[in-house]
Amino acid sequence: MKKTILSMFLVAAGLSVFAQPGVTKPARPAAKPALPVLKTMDDSASYAVGISVANFYKEQGVKKLNTALVSKAINDVLGNKKTLLDNNAANMCMNNYMNRLQQEKSKGTILAGEAYLANNKKRPEVKTTPSGLQYEVLREGTGERPNKEDSVTCHYRGTFIDGKGFDNSYDRGEPITFPLNHVIAGWTEGLQLMTVGSKYKFYIPYALGYGAYDNRDIPGGSTLIFEVELLGVKRKQ
Image 1: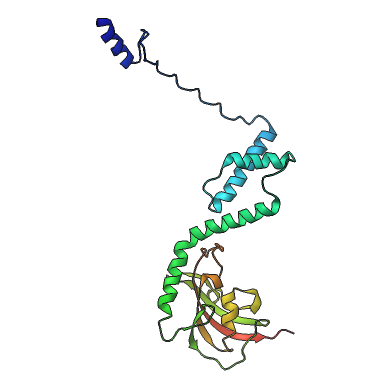
Image 2: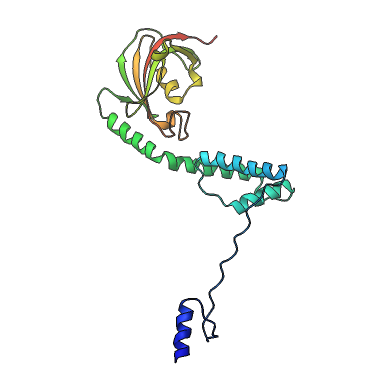
């Protein structure tokens, strides 16, 4: 009895020296795998490639990848083996994947913009075109009206729906001249509604602006508000 009690005590303490039926010795901790060592320039370059690729896709919103498949794809291409996807399928897959990530990232901004526009269109001074562009006439001019092939000269002020500004030609002290068919769809459509001397306010849905993707300081999915003065029109020769 004493031996049994001692055995139980030692087993509980992980120190048993008696062979007891059904009692398993504590497993030794597995040895930690050795960390990779950068022994050669090729090793360093390989690791640097991994850092570059990971940082690029991390900035695009990719948070998780199956690194085993990433490694297989690299080995297949460099080893001239048949890949699981051809180039066209791989490009299509990446486009769809990145579009999905961007839509998820921009969802809150898109919904906020849609709610703003739905409320804004109730104001009697705001008109809405079939495309979804909203505009308000602040001052009506008497000059000529541009076509989309023309170039226009404008002063403008751009803000988000929270009133924060992101671009302003007045602050730069000079208007801007540009071909009307080389700008966002909301501007191409909206400026053709104006005559020279007019000042309008445009409320541009993200689909008529910069879309779901971030564009410099403009988050993807942003509804944009522009006050625009049309100062001149240059006809296409």
